[in-house]
Length: 160
Image (cartoon, rainbow, N blue to C red; front, side, top):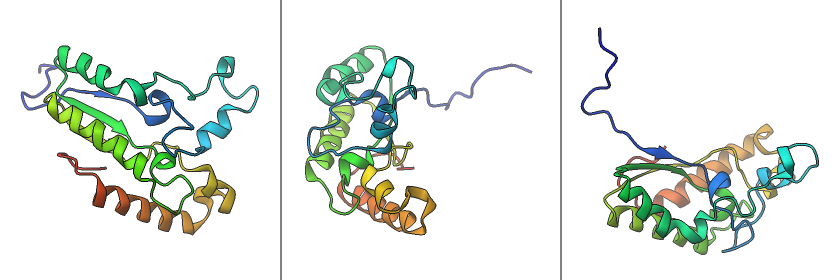
């Protein structure tokens, strides 16, 4: 028995929006539950937040260039619900446009985008409205969010 990956195994890299994007108050983005959580004293080591993070929101072109130079062919990233539908109701076109630019840049560099719809950073507005996932309404809001993403963001790979 050998411990080798199959020849068709897809190697890649992954990030999450809150941990990499930064720009938490730019492009129409409003607070997510992580923004609120990370600002409570004692909750996060050193009081760190995702306010700047790796500044991927501003540096994504350079980041993707580096990925291409490293030979990366697949990039799994999460979408920020708080950037796409900040208030939980209306689609923020600036948020969609950021992810369109990101996907276009990935494709230009021969990197397959793999988007994750939800990585634990729902809009704080929905948390305030009905306790987030404790309410059945949150599932309906997530369905609206998923529909907004799928109808506006073309991604070569499956969204999941």
